[in-house]
Image (cartoon, rainbow, N blue to C red; front, side, top):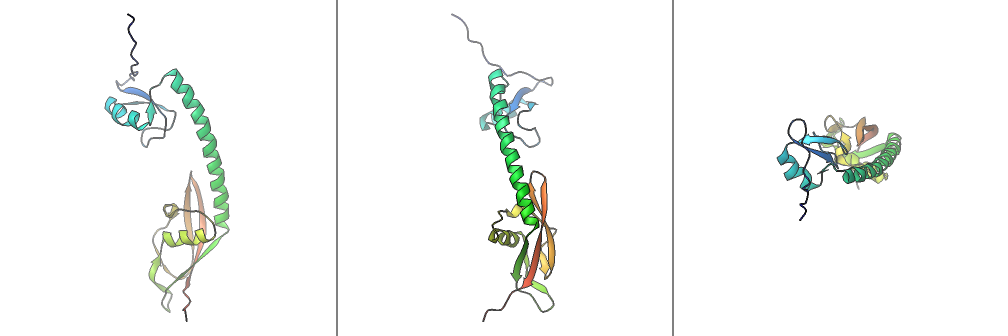
Length: 167
């Protein structure tokens, strides 16, 4: 009776197991990289979560096809973000807030208010994309930086005005 050959994971030069990453893993590598990790980390985390696979010929071919699709999707996303960045640069967001006669705000204007103002103009931005040194506490025109991801940054003009009293 022929014996079945067991698929063993290749050992790296430092004694760890070699795996191919199917997703980007922070502090380890990017998708498609051949990495060497400790056996427990690979067996108990990377393989069950689907973040890595054993480097066989078949898996490498599948990974190459998958990388091509992911690269095309990433390029399309970057193009969309560049268009969004250009649209945001041309926009001025006006935010009404309660303020004293001297121009000091009773509260403050932060990222959620800026995001709400951008969404009213059909510009879809998340609050974690807004980069502010601190909250806005006075009436004025501010330039607020936005990091849209994939190293695309832009700036939006935020005009904070006194809220009109309702009669």
